Length: 202
Image 1: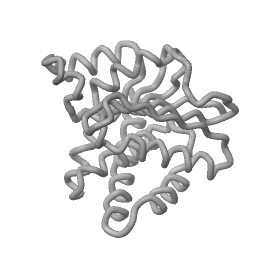
Image 2: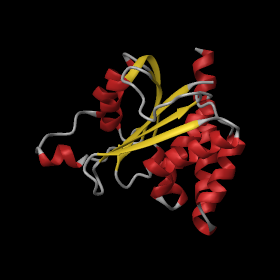
Image 3: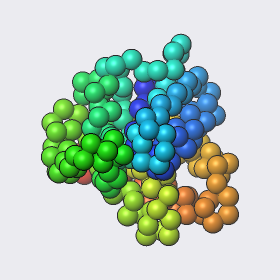
Image 4: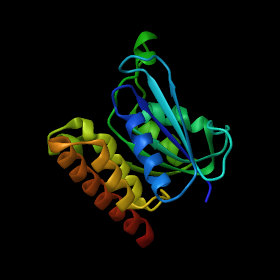
C-alpha cells in the first residue's frame, strides 16, 4: 500500500495531532510511515500542513501532483492545499471558516464558502462535514479534528483501521478529553458511513 495524505488547516486546529494519530495508527498496522509538518506563520491562525506518507517512500514531503487524500480542517486552506493534489484526488473537509492570518494581514475578504465547495467538487471527489458543530455539541470545539478524522474513516478512503485509531486516541488524550474525543470519532464515523451509503445509492 502506498498512500499520500495531506492535512491542512490553521494553527490551533490540531492539524499536527491529527497527523500523529494517523501516522501512529498506520505504524501499528505494520506500515512504513513518513510524516512532515510545515508551518506558515507559526502563531495561532497561521497556515499549517502535514504530509503523511504511508508505504515504501524515501522522502517525507509529498511531491506536487501526488497527494491522494486531502483532509482539510479549514475550507480556504483546503483549497490552497489542493494545488498539490493529483487529478481525481479525494478530499474530506470541515466547513467551519477560520480566517487565516495571511488573509487578514492583506485585508482580503474571505471567499464565499459555496464558491470554495463548488470549485473543489468540480475537480476532486469531495465530502464535507461541519466538524466544529459536532465538537461544540459534545462540549469541546477542540475535538473537531477527531470528528473530521472519524468522518474520513467512515468514507472508507483512509487506509487505516478504526480500531487502531481508537487505540491511538486513548494514548493521546486522558480523562474528560478522551471521552469527548472518542464520542467525536464515533459521530464523525457514523456521518462518514452515511455519506458513503448515500453516494452508492445515487
